[in-house]
Length: 560
Image (cartoon, rainbow, N blue to C red; front, side, top):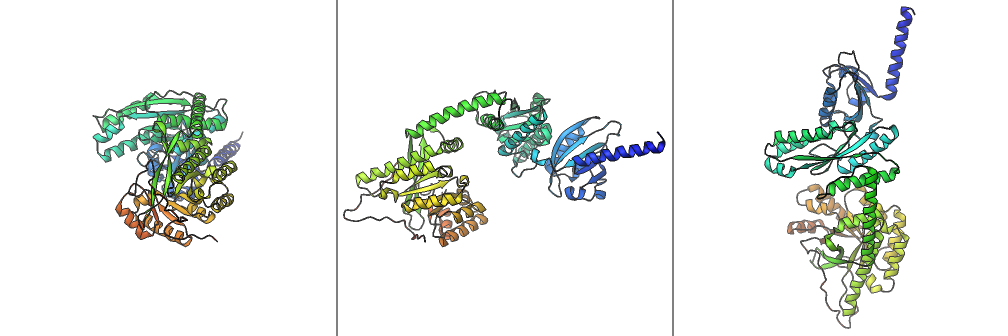
């Protein structure tokens, strides 16, 4: 082969190599041994916000977001000649574009690094999410679970061995008491950086609870080394602290599980770890996790169905008061369960497992029985608001059962208000509107729970004709100090006045809040300022010879 032929062959090979590289990357970058960019080609301006010519001479880490600099620096520093790293998530400082950075360090290249920067792989790694823990820079529990699930699916397709390590930092609260806020922030930030360094892709680590963390990593990961490094870091920051690290690893292998079952098993494993305080956490595989989850879930489902169907729970009643005259307008009936089981967690579990209809129907029956007690005594009937999940509203069987339950007594129907919770779970709003109007035509009233400032709340108000909305308590808590929340409440109040919809403020706890709500034109309030949930309702006897047609106070409602 002649010299010219060799040169042509080498040029052809180089062009072929570059073509293959661009097929897999949006931007190619070469760094010298000090991490300074000496070559760049591709979509430099679009990805980094810096022209190709201007990139040369800059340190690569200096064009990255602050949260990613330490991780990338550590990855590059730890590479040896011949190494190739799993792509790492990184966000560009100027453009805030999330990318995936792959790197290799070839022999006989004077310590240079060759990077492939891509945006097409970001969906798989879900690099930069807005829902990060503010102290550690790690993913929150929900996004970490989603990311771990994605990595598990990817590993299944590629045959890669991937594990999940769950860590608990014992003594963290004690350490927090022994050092100042800045030291604690620095420590947690370093823990976050350390976990990301060990994680697959540099961003598959999450903060699951105050003192609990998760890391997705390759099977070569040394958990003991990480435990020792965190303990050593804690001793440097707070020598008197008693920090110890416990870890447990779970193989992220689906085995014979379907994709859905594997996801549910992963969720069970993580939630079990987060909520487990006493027993030793020792689940070692998703198959074991799935078996435990199914057994635990099934047992709890059967137990709760029995509770609902046999009415083995009680109702307590919290007053909802007219802000104008401070008179009780109606009561919300709230479920309470034996053994101190959290009502919120019970309702969430019932919704997730599809047995919420049983609870909603049982509450409706108990509320009817309560009103029948007042009827038998000849007392004035109070109005009761009962919660109905948006999931229950989706069920024809539930709607038929509810209407049948109240069909025989118009007086009781006039004293029932259905408070629709979890409105986001209502799939077909047109169908929901038809159902709600059927219910309202039977003289029952409708409220929408937890209405906020998002566009979805206005969408529901527009699509669903209701009698009341309950404003999310987070706005009420901040109304005294947050001008934006006050403005939102004011606009919501005006909108509802125009639509003849009553407004109910949740979590009213102080006289100052009440004053602001009065000024803003909110109609009703609920919260500890007016009264805590109580076991019974005090009412009066019906006056003899007077026909009662109780209407709600404050304004007349007409629907045309």
